[in-house]
Length: 438
Image 1 (cartoon, rainbow, N blue to C red):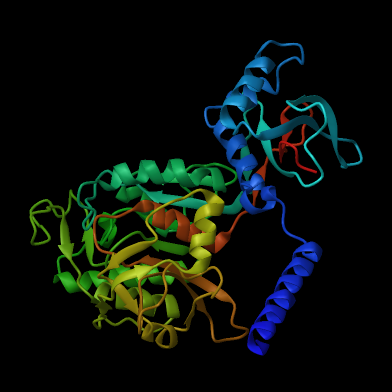
Image 2: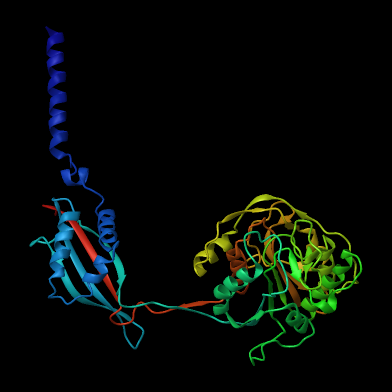
C-alpha cells in the first residue's frame, strides 16, 4: 500500500513540473521555425528580374507607365503566396558638394499594413540601358615599340605570325601608353638601335621605352648586324640589344619561350632555317640570352651558355589574379612552363624582381616562369637601368599574359565614369515579410 502511494506522489510531482514548465516556456513562433531566408530571397528575386534587363528598363520609365503593372505581376509570380513585399525605387543623384542623394521615385507593395517589423531586404543598383559607362586608363608616359617587321619570321608562336600578334597587342596595349609605334621592318629596328626615332611624332621617346618582341624565341636582326661567321656569333647581336636596353633604360619584352634563341631576317637568311623548316632564321641557342644579360649588366661580351627549366604547371600570384580582374584581362590562371628562367640570374646580373608588381607566376623552386626583371647598377646608387620581361611558357603563346605582365608592372589607374550622374542609376530596394508577421 505504501509503495502505491509513493508512486502516485511521484506522478503528481512530475505532472505538476511539466504543467509549470509549459506555462512559463517561451516557444518560437511557427514563422520563426519555418521562415525562408527572406534576405536571400529578396536579392535572388531582384537578380532574376534584372537578368534580361527588364528591371532596369522599367524603373527608368515614367511612374505612370503601364509597365510598372507588369513589374507587380512579375513580383507576384516570383514570390511565394505567403510573402508580402514592398519595392522602392530611388534615383541616385550626386550634388555639387559630391554628396550622394537618393530621391524616391516609386513604391510598389502588395500589403496595406506593411511587411512587418521582422522583415528583411536587399538592394540592387541598376544602370539605364541608354547610358554607356566608359573606362579611361591612365596613360603610361612611355613609348611602346611593337616589333612588326615584315622581313622576319617567328618561332614558338605556332598557329600565329608575329604580325598577327603585333596587331592584337597594339589593340590591347595602345590605350595605356602615350605613344605606340609599330616597327615595320628590320631596317626600322636598326634605326631604333642607332638612336633614331621612327615616327617623327613629338611624343616618341626612345629613352625609357618598352620594346615588345612579338617573334617568340626569335628576334629580328637588321642587315647591318648580319655577318658570315658561325651562328653563335649572333650572340654578339643580342649582346648589343642588352647594352642598348641598359643605355636607354628600355623594358625588353619576350612574349613566350626561350628569349633570343634565334635571329631572323628573311632576306639575309633566305636559305637558312631553324632546323624545323622555318626559313629566314638561324639558331643562336642559349648564348643569346647570356650575351643579352651580360650586355644589360655592363659586363664584357661572352657567348657562354644559359639554362632554362621546365617546372610544369605554374599558377598566378595573388597580385596577378587581382590585376587580371582590375584590367579585365582573363588568361587562364595556370599555365605550362617549359622555358622558365633560373633565379640564379638575379645575383649574377644584378637583377631584382618587385614582389608586388614583378611576378606573374609563383616561383617553383629556382624557376621563374614569368616576371619583369629590373637591372640595378651596383654603382653609384642602385638605380634601375633596363629591364627584361620574360614569359617562359610553352607554345602556343597567350598574349594576354604579356599584356597582364606589363599592366601589372606599370599598374596604370583606370578612371571609370560615375554611376552617380543624374538619370543614369537607380537603387531598387525589395523588402520582404511573411503574411501575418509582427
